[in-house]
Image (cartoon, rainbow, N blue to C red):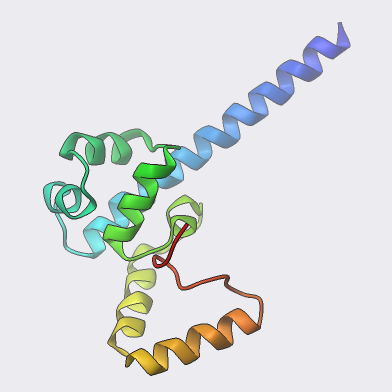
Length: 129
């Protein structure tokens, strides 16, 4: 009987973590879209997804990696940023805009130094996944 309760608790905890993560995705996609001054329609078009997909993600989140990658690329951030539970979208957008304003050489040096410290694997929002 105890095993049932442990199993139930674990399943409940896994659902709670999944629900929490999906709420974070919903909140972050909406925040990043708004911070970028995009409508749901323009984000959908730039991400190559239906507008209803953006509406659904902003409403209840998603764990669909293909959709997350498309939205992250369109928003100029990494998927890891969209699934993070404590993100300040406006601040993150300012950082992304600052980095994008740098020359290609400065960006390359910055990301090489950052990866040498072990803080990042690759440039956020870019490259193969």
